[in-house]
Image 1 (spheres, one colour):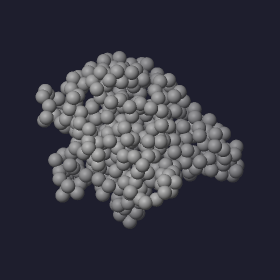
Image 2 (cartoon, helix red, strand yellow; image 1 turned 135 degrees about the vertical axis):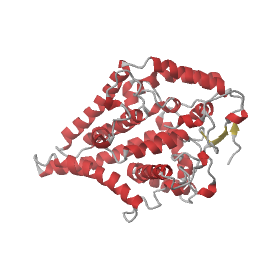
Image 3 (cartoon, helix red, strand yellow; image 1 turned 120 degrees about the vertical axis):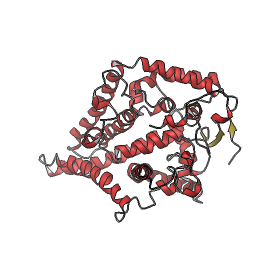
Length: 411
């Protein structure tokens, strides 16, 4: 590990005050424009899905598959992602179906978010663990650590890229399904006092209980085995229901047209699954990876430190314009999302230039590049050709002034 960079010169409390002020000002202006924007993006996604299936029965084709893929991409990255973070809960007059307590819960899963991941498992892995531990050893999505087995392998780069390609087209079910289910099982065990506290809660390595540890979250630990309770939950709540929905029920709707139409929709659906896995991988995976982004050893101590790390450990892509943002699932505003996870997607468009200027004013590095440049930096990290930078931020105990406790960050 290279010598970590310190950020002692940053006035954490002043930065936090300015960031909070921006967020509070935005919260005052939540309203019908945010709901109209959400409905528009939802409509675009639905149109993609409808047009995709409306043409998929004619013959298996990549255009229909891309449209179906974009529809699934939108449901996850824009709708589930932002609604699940309570992004619309505070919008005046918001319909219940756009709130975190209703969207994708119970039977609505297959209306709002028909995907491989169980919604509450996704929320535990992403909303709580990833956001609460962004870039530190408690982050379940810390790419450099998760892929260390490939980084250290003595293999030609082209072979490593082939391995990455396989995971890129299958990562929803090969990576996120077992990881999110395991995070849900871990949280359930914690609530039932069946395991000890995590490191973030004052636990020790001897406990062996980390929300981030590969021993706790790795799919290699029986998550796919039908012979244990953990694996059976993966199959019964995630893999089987979605497979029946996407590759069983939906193609069967076209069987009255002809057997060929049914086979065509099935083949196009499989093609769309490959596309949406690849699309989400290219957009999501680079968000927190690159030699110009930082990772941390210790967990955060308070909200002020959280704000600084949210910027240091995240990257934005090119922003602006609903079409551009729609195609990137509004994940091109990753910095703004980590700073204000409970704001609507439209607000990120308005806040992005303000936060960027604020970071420059306070000396907090704000990284923004095209998605394709970030994919290149991601691949360098994953193949071991470059490494993440390390940073030491100043915890609350070492600073003067009061700040909000870190526990208030948990969703």
